[in-house]
Length: 219
Image 1 (tube, one colour):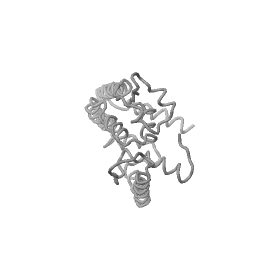
Image 2 (cartoon, one colour):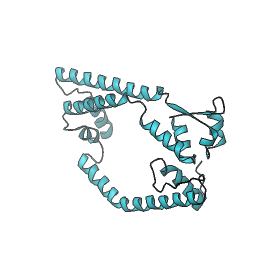
Image 3 (cartoon, helix red, strand yellow):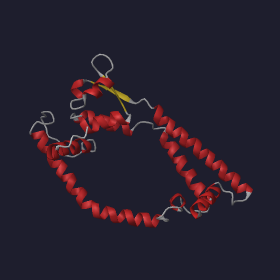
Image 4 (tube, helix red, strand yellow):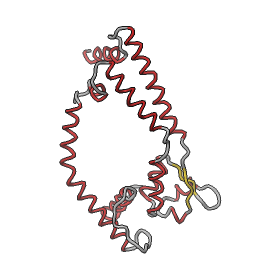
C-alpha cells in the first residue's frame, strides 16, 4: 500500500502539482516542448533512409538470407542503417572496407538530430530545476535505490577500475587474432596487414574468435 501511495504521489509531484500556478504552467510548457522534440528526434531516426549499395564481393561472410533480403537490381545489394543490416555487416562481413563504410555512414546519419539533442538536454535540465533538483541526474535518480549521481559515479568508477585490465587484455588478444587471421588468409588476401583493431573490427573478430576457439556460431 505504501508503494502504491508513493507512486501516486510521485506522479503528482512530477506533474508539478505542488507548484504555484504560474510555475506549474511553465513546467507544463517545458514538458510539452521536450516531448515534441523527443518525438521529432525518434521520427528522424525511423524515417532515415541512409544506405549504400554493395556487390557480392564486398559482402563476403554474410548469410544467404541477408543477401536475399537486400538484393536490389543489377547484381548489387542495398544496405541500410537498420539494426538488422548494421549487425549483419559488423559481425559477419569479412571485408573491412565494407564494415568501415557502414560505421562511418551510421555515425553521420540524422545530423539534424544534433541540434534537437542540445535542445532536449537543456529542457530536461530546466524541468529538473523547476521541480527543485540541481541537475537532470538528481531528478531521474531521486526515486531509484541509488538515489544520487555520486552513488552511481562511485559504483561505475569501481566497476571500470576492475574491468579495465581485463578489457585491455581482451583487446590485445583480438588484435593478435586479427593479425593471425590476415596472415593465414582467413579474411581475404591483402598486400598490407592492418595491425590495428579498429572500431569496425571489434564485433567481427570477436565473433570469429568465439567461433574458432569455442565453436560458438552466433548467427
